[in-house]
Length: 97
Ligand SMILES: [Zn+2]
Image (cartoon, rainbow, N blue to C red):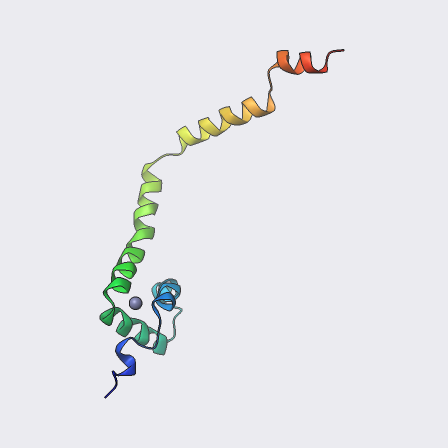
């Protein structure tokens, strides 16, 4: 007998990756949810990926909240200031006749 079709739930590993967001947001229809779950049960790689995926948004959100962007903002501002306020000397010498 050939292996049961629902062993990997008809879904490829790539489809599992694509469905992760829908599954977590509840947008995935019941049938696909079941296929998704049965694939995870039979595929440790996708299970690991899904677990990581599920945790990632929370972790990065916390990390972003902890890391105040002040330093980044200052760095960007300094960068822009250098860009848009070129030193008068070099600007002057290049345009002087
Ligand atoms: Zn898989």
